[in-house]
Image (cartoon, rainbow, N blue to C red):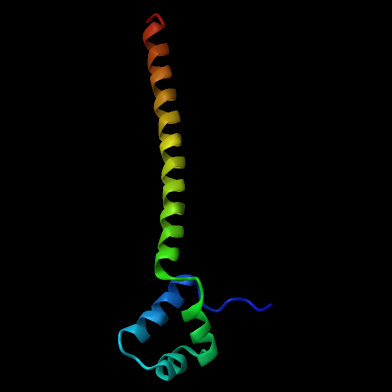
Length: 89
């Protein structure tokens, strides 16, 4: 199986060009794809909402990971601050 030439966002952009009024042949020629490829993309399950849902889920996971890292850093800082207060000068 060959390497994908276009990622999901690029495919959505190509499909959007057609929705915005360009003909299928013009879009296919401009991007170097065949008409069957275009129609396969159009009929596939990769609708815009699916791509955005995947992207949102990935961002939420990254956000959760960053929140965890921040909480750990704040806990470490608070622990060090307490330790410094308890040590005699």
